[in-house]
Each structure stands twice: as C-alpha cells, then as structure tokens.
Length: 80
Image 1 (cartoon, rainbow, N blue to C red):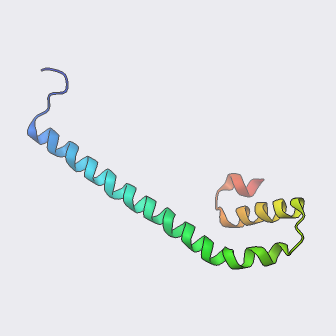
Image 2: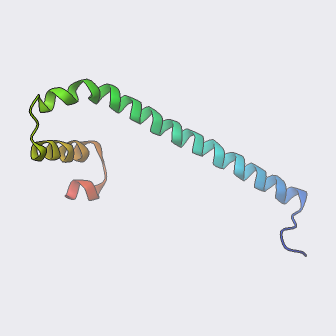
Image 3: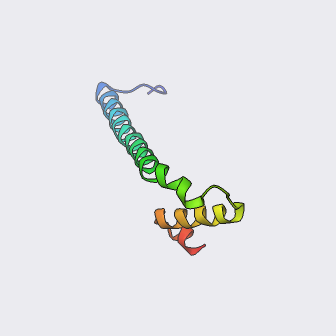
C-alpha cells in the first residue's frame, strides 16, 4: 500500500473529523468573542471611575492583579 492512499471510507472519516474540528473551533472563538464583549460592557464604564483622574501605577497594577484573580478560576492565578 502506497503512502497517503486512503479508501473512500477513510476519506469520509477524515472529512467528518475536519468538520467536527471546525465546528468546535467556531464555537470556541464565538465564546471568546462573547466573553470579550461582555467584559467591555461590564468593565468599560466603571474602569475609569475606579482609578479616578490621577492614577498611581502601583495602585493600577494592584487593581489589575485583583481583577485577574477574581475573574480567573485557575489555581495558579489564585495562589499568587
């Protein structure tokens, strides 16, 4: 049997696998888009009021770290 020669059944399985991969990739990217849009809506208006007019870079860093810890559910992030 030569290299890269598949039966029609194998080609069908490859095609179905690629379709399933594209399906799940689409919904993964859609979920990321929705998450980004919701973060902009929820945090866009209040982000400026948290820091005020005069921003301290250390305070901004601490607020960013706190927001990351609260939003992420990873044990690596929460253990920092």
